[in-house]
Amino acid sequence: MAWVLLLVLVATATTTAAQEWRAGTAAVSFSPRPQDLEDGIYLGGYGAYQERGKAVGTYAPIYVRSLALTDGKERLLLLTLDAVGIDNQLLARIRDGASKATGWPEDRIWVAATHTHSAPDLQGLWGGTAPAYRAYVVLRTTQAARQAVDALEPVELAATSLRASGLGLNRRSWAFTDETLSLLVARRPSGDTVAMVVNVGMHPTLLGAGNLLISPDWVGPMLSALEEWYGGTVLFVNGAEGDVVPADTLPGLTGATEYGLRVALQADQALRRLPSPAGASRAAATRAAGAPGPAPSAPGGTVSPAARWVTLEPELAVSVGEVSLPVQNQAFIQAIQRGILQYDVQQTEGGLSITTRVGHAVLGRAPQQAEMLTVPGEAVTRLGIQLRGLMQSPTSFLLGLTQDTLGYFIPWDEWMTGRNGNYEESVSLGVTPAVLLHQALSGLP
Image (cartoon, rainbow, N blue to C red; front, side, top):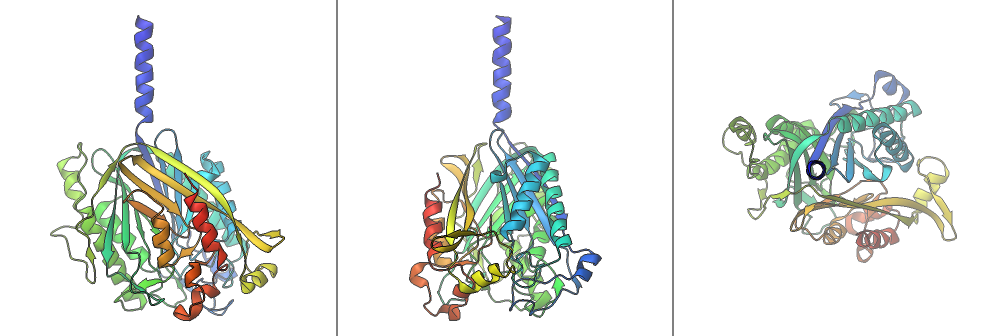
């Protein structure tokens, strides 16, 4: 009887240990070193090849931020880099390094670019960087991955999706954008914040093409404000930002700082409605109220009062897949053939194609769930809304520029209709990839 009781106790303890969230985070700078600037760092996002010129210095550090998350069975490691994009050769090295450093499988390592247009060009499209700096990026992302996994600790998870209006304008002349702002918060049982993920679709382009100083753009001030108010490490993943630019904002450093604070204040309004964990101390509950004093209003925007937080029980399901996308853009084909774009491609009977990854994650148990869907590039608004509709939960994260950076994805019925001078079409693989991407994502369990 004693042995039976012991076995029951051991089994119960094992089950209990498996049924808890554990999270770990890190933030590691990969700002160019002096020798990297001497070697030459081209900034990404504007103009033709090498037209913009080389970076002359660093205004604000750029980071790789990591979040390791597990329910005791399944695992997911999210890495976000302050970069306009990342080519698939470098992504493969990053995933390989992170996997070897952590022991976590590569297909559970999701890498995203924030899309700041004032960071080193990690695609080669605008001039690129020296090989030594690319190796440095791999080193620093590997360190961030390992530190996050080493820091795993018990947490409670909560998430919300809300409508944050007034933040963006649609540059393709649609009267709407995807205004969804989603938040994932990991807290210790005491109430202290371990990590936060902010997901909203918006171009970080306020510093402009004339800027030659490295910076995360408005994303940096937004993350700094939330980390100051709530503690922990805050990650930003862009959403359906393909045709969305900041609204009612001045350009330049002042505008980037003010706009970053606006986004942070929008998030803060929702975070103030986040219930404290049952075991939170009074001090932790006070800190969870954000910035001191009454909640400041967010100029130029409002938060939907219908937004609600869901507490996520410790259950994680991750599914991944691959899709082959044809390269139909002749400019891209020539850049790949000339070695300017550092992408691995496949030669098929129909021409060149790129194989990319897609992923779907479900956090929690029905009906209290949050979902994540990855997009390997920049979805414009109408496609982004369609892709978000593939997720069943009202709490949803559309992770743009994640697992790849393959340009703009545009619905077939919007293709070459003259919107924004067809600019997005000129930096897209072609008309077919959006259809194939939708099919691939809809086929994930």
